[in-house]
Amino acid sequence: QVQMVESGGGVAQPGRSLRLSCAASGFTFSSHGMHWVRQAPGKGLEWVAVMWYDGYNEYYADSVKGRFSISRDNSRDTLYLQMDSLRAEDTAVYYCARAKGGGDPNDGFDVWGQGTMVTVSS
Amino acid sequence: QSVLTQPPSASGTPGQMVTISCSGSSSSIGSNPVHWYQQLPGTAPKLLIYSNNQRPSGVPDRFSGSKSGTSASLAISGLQSEDEADYYCAAWDDSLSAWVFGGGTKLTGL
Image (cartoon, rainbow over all chains, first blue to last red):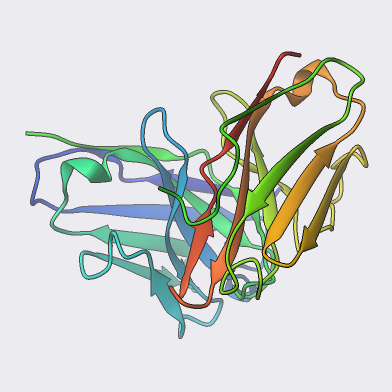
């Protein structure tokens, strides 16, 4: 069945780095845009980044621009989020989500992983 | 403060209809489709409505979406207890070159 499984979350000190992974299965990964969305404890959803199906278009929320980097390996059906210079406000559950299509604005996020928790604390 | 504005809460009783609004701008809702998500307590979000008014397979037709100008609405008819959840709208914003979410609406009272 279609699913995505995130990993790589944990506790990191401010200023340090973490790399999240999202392993996809059950669908043609290379045909879909892929997103990262986060949710701070008790708060709403915040979009983080997207990479289109072909890996050539990527966009970021202002809150993470210059610190986070999204990438994908279509040969491994895996999405990544490299998070550098972490801050306390980056503490959240991080979800990977599949775009219904290639990644453009017409595409809702139709499949979500279960999320991985990132805690930034000294 | 979210780019898309939703009421923080809504309530209804079983069988009623409730509507949740989502207000944006010309660069977000005014220029791009709106998508709606349902998040049940302790679970990942689920796509409820895409492209303003389209339902993914498996979503009951009690859920419907509409858009007019820079605002959108989610309507839930025949409310059921399992509809108690948080609901979020989302759209691409051309000015920000970013996806934006509403702050979420908690539906209670069921």
